[in-house]
Image (cartoon, rainbow, N blue to C red; front, side, top):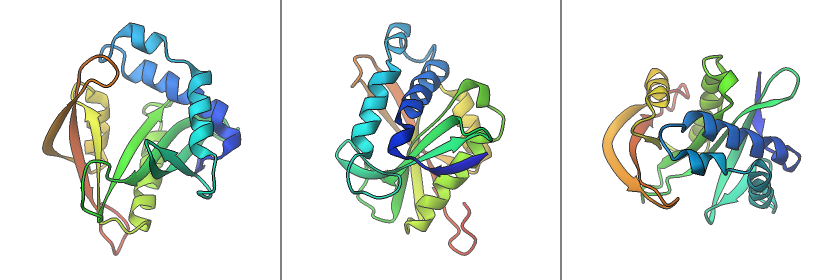
Length: 185
C-alpha cells in the first residue's frame, strides 16, 4: 500500500474510483438513478481539469479553491482510494482545514486502505499548519461515521442540508484536533 499525491496520468483511475466508491457507499442514501448515471469518463475529465495548472504535485483546483489530491495504490500500482484536503470551505478560521473527501473502492473497505489514506490526509493537513480539521459525512452513512470515530474524529454538533444534486441529503460535521508535537489527533 502506497499513498502519494495524485498526478494527471492518474485521472482515468481516479474517475473510476470516484464513481465506483460513490455507487457502493451511497446506495440507499442517494437515489439509484443518480448513482447509476455517474460516468467515470466524465469524472476523469473533471479531475484532469482540476489537476491541470501550476499548483504543484497533487495540487488541484476544485470549486474555485486550491486543494491537494492524494491517492492510495496497491502493490501493483492500481488505485484503490482517493482523498482531497484543503482549507475549511465553510469557515473563516485559518487554523482549520478540511478533509473534503475520502472515497474507497468497496473491495478495499476494512482492509486498512482507508486508515492509511486518512492518516496521510491528516498529516498533510497538519503539515500545512492547520491545528484542527473538519469533515462532512451523510448522517445515514453509519459505516463512514464509525470509521471516522475509530480514527479519533468526533461529531461537533453541526448539521446542514444539501440539495445541490436535485435531492435532499443531510450531513453532519466531524472534527479532529491535531497534537502539534506528535502529528496526531
